[in-house]
Image 1 (spheres, helix red, strand yellow):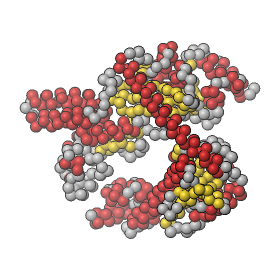
Image 2 (image 1 turned 135 degrees about the vertical axis):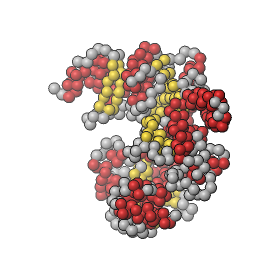
Image 3 (image 1 turned 45 degrees about the vertical axis):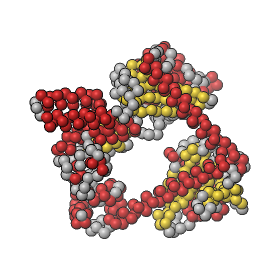
Length: 584
């Protein structure tokens, strides 16, 4: 019995009842989550005749589900970090570390997290910078501007003590977790109680806190008084594209707007509910209500799926009139505008790519372009950078960095040859896998002229890597002037769209390579500065920089914090601590 026959037999044994099914690849990773009124009929469809499958099913069979991947954006999760020991603090961070701090979250919307933290810091007059207390108290001698405009209580200058500062931090956390409505209710009750007890100074401080909350939060536009905990979905299609817009309301405020572009969908109830389910598959923060505009017969299944996924009741409804219908219309309008902008942008980029194809006589449309540049200072910290443009847009998740390993000194030709040789080797590990180095580009562009092209062309031919290769030549003012081939230069100044496109690519690869070089050079310089301390060699210096990131943080670290660095013993930690205290 073949594998497909075995799967078909298992599918036939499923109950003819509503339920949720999960598709996994051979390594166990989830590639699709779906729902069905009849599990047996729906799942059986995946293992029948391929020619009869819909486009969506064929894509799932190729491990490329239509929505489950596209609706997982590349932002990742965000947290609110609460440093609980000594002088407390709160901050918005992207990673949850095992550092003893308390973390609130995760949240999917970075703007929601950063806005919530900023509001809390402003209201409770907490420091905004990266100061570390008590080390940084009185270090600068006088308060910053925030103190004078009443956005900071001046902890860095000793204006308030640790106890009062920590009370403000804890109040700020309550404001973030409980929301402004509950916080205002509590503060007003405390102010009334203080007035009755004739504690007028305390009442005045509470009054000022209430005014601060009202002043800061009024900057947000409350578009729906009834939208306390609500997500609104709207989908629009134009030409061959569709756009999903999600408006996320919390405590009456619009805290985030998510938009996603993908290939055109049929606006069927099945596709729409699959898409909404996929949106929440990667998000831990479910709302109490979800507003959609899909046929009512699908609402029960979607409601059951969301309720089961988050462990609490989720109301799913289709607004028919009033304020919530206005919100649905707003989501559709946002999706329409996003589509119009995206398609206009895509059309310009595609036109430029077609002109580039004709100009260079490329055999294929240059959908996937890789560009390379080398950066060093007199041969030191010699590095290479690779950027990728897909359909004329930067594909930053595919960018790569290289340290030159085969030689020391300055030689851009040999450096580029090494980088391309290593890149090709990675391709042949898993050719045509469709991801990262497993993609063969349609075009390779080098920052440089005929010499660079000649050095790399030898590598491509020797490895059998048949990809068109050209160089990007700059003028005396470091602006893109022409495209270089062996024995000739192709002028592009008269072709505005091609000139703009290749200039953007050349500027981006130069920026990426030189940024990597500078970061390595700066780290090396900082590490070298640490080796003057007794007991600190190059390895320990590097470990210190990896742990603390900046010299200022090393300067402010306590002995116990320094002992957490690999290779640092107590004697060395005390030497580092005393070295910086002696400087101070």
